[in-house]
Length: 528
Image (cartoon, rainbow, N blue to C red):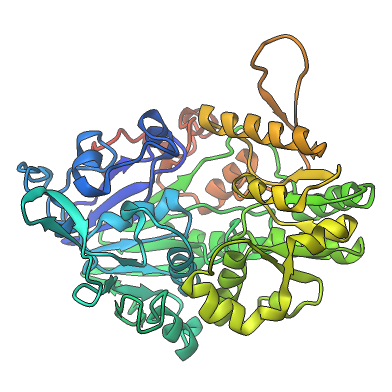
């Protein structure tokens, strides 16, 4: 029986990974993420898919492949008369990590189709779903079922009587049984509002994976990335092993995990290696130690408030700024949703430092009428003494580092900074929409007299100058081009399939005469 690999998305772009593997009569998807580049061609913050129309918008625009039988039936309005046309066998989804460009569109998928991932990734997805106002298409950990409106079945709506329609949990299998414990499953099966007034959750407890799905045996390997829980996979077929790296790097604090994966993958002598290629044009990445040194110098020289912009799921960066806060005599202030995530992640791995017990870490007291249920029932009950109000920060601006992203700068209106710095410690803006957000951020910082560190705009010249980003304040979650070539040569597959890259030709040029590179076309099967 042949081996067929089809890249439905992510063939010549970064993100949106949807890779289908068919072998031994078993079909699986490797990731099922959101293609944000394509998304940005049609949507933005205030223009989104219509929840009342379910799958219709996304299928018509080609945001998801028209595969028959894999999507939630409750997302089909009556006038979506044409069933998705592609006949593709899908027995399971394998998720490499919890970033939405790799798993976000699982929210559209039938919750009965099993998902395989690490325990950490599952818990991060649950915490993110609990504490966010998740759009219907990104309901990964559990879904809010919809019904057709009685007098107009072309319209979908969420059941108004929550007692009749509880949340529906997905079937998840975790590939690292050693991290599965009663505390994790208690969190996984608890609804976001665990009270009489909240919607119930019909959760399927997390179960350990058996190492086999259908007729395919698989191996899972933890790797280092900018989010904990990242996992690479290898699948044994009669033609040979197929290895998928997902997103990974060597230069992080846990780079040893990736090195162990490379060694074990090489030992499999794989037929096919499917690899990311995000940073193929980049040299060796900036290490977290360099980020620490550069950001520490900036904080020590700062007068007034310090704002640090980094992804809250990046625990490595959170640890960096907590160390900087201690070294500079400041406290690090995170949002309540970040505290909720930290609590959940430590349920999985007690090796993660107990950051919420650290005397230098605080929780921002957001001004709102009432806290969300997840915050009231967990964060405030367990960590209520950690909250710090805007008024206290305003009076003592030199005592704090605020972990705020662009989307949180509105809270500065309560803090009312008088100068200070904003450290841009996150990835560069890659799209036009992201550049617009950076321009808006620039306006906020100018309003408060805050000096940006890590990016600037060149004065003069164009009426719309582009932002200039500075190296040294952010460490990428992806392996560099030269390091990746070394990894590929060490694993030495017979065939290489590059995905998650805008420059797949890089591999053809650099590996000519060494390894055969198969360049995928979206939706076109590769038979090897």
